[in-house]
Length: 340
Image (cartoon, rainbow, N blue to C red; front, side, top):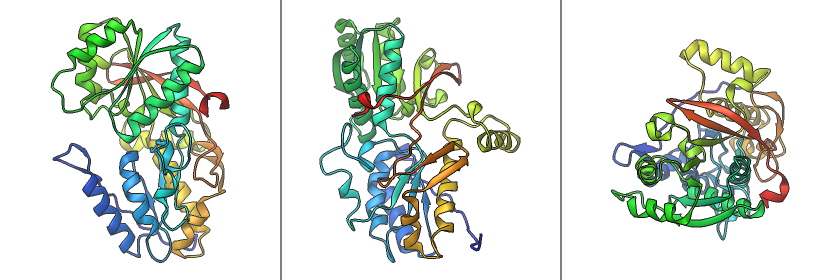
């Protein structure tokens, strides 16, 4: 195309928090918005960080600064309904103009897919936990709602404190409830490995099931062996066309098979570049070009982005942790009746 594009990687985390940091997210957002040479942002990984960044980018001059996420799944960033909080998503767009899109299905699809998989295991009683954060609570709620709709008994719904040194009391409550499966809505960075250890120590036979916040086997550790973990989209090895080319190229350059989100990062960048190509060279027009975009034969296949910024690609893949690997088990597309 006619434009020369540069790339700079940034970090929303700090060593002190060992994860994304509220102040760092805000600082980064102000730097992006104030630098007129920045024409778009690919990110973020964490939904909570996105909810800080998007409104700041929305007020950028001249016109809102575009952001495309490969990983945010909190529904409230784009839509109302299950998993969205009061005032969402409008409060993230103070100018009244949307500037955010994602190439990954939101948790209104991930939670139901997890519930469908739970039922396919022949289980009937589930205990639902969340890490009390935006993402974790949202995916836990959509899982619980869908579970009830398909006849599963939700015997508990509770948040866990990431700063606790022991979850033995919670683990005992889960065992006493008769739950056959415990769903951990949240991210492993919020003391998730310790939580899993305590649950398994009290009840070794209980099935652990988690969303993509637990998609790093190294962080999960040995206790994650046998757990089922959902990740939005298709597994890298099942991608065809441009997706297969990406996986092959990634393997040659990096030496390993890409993790599930690598292809989504590449697709997010591709979407942003397509929007830049349609912008007429105006930063404020890049965001406008995201909505209604149709991608044919992209890295993730063919899909569209609607006027809210959500993708039409709603497949969710369930993986099983085996050692330090995630092995794909099944790909599901939840019916509309479970999503709303």
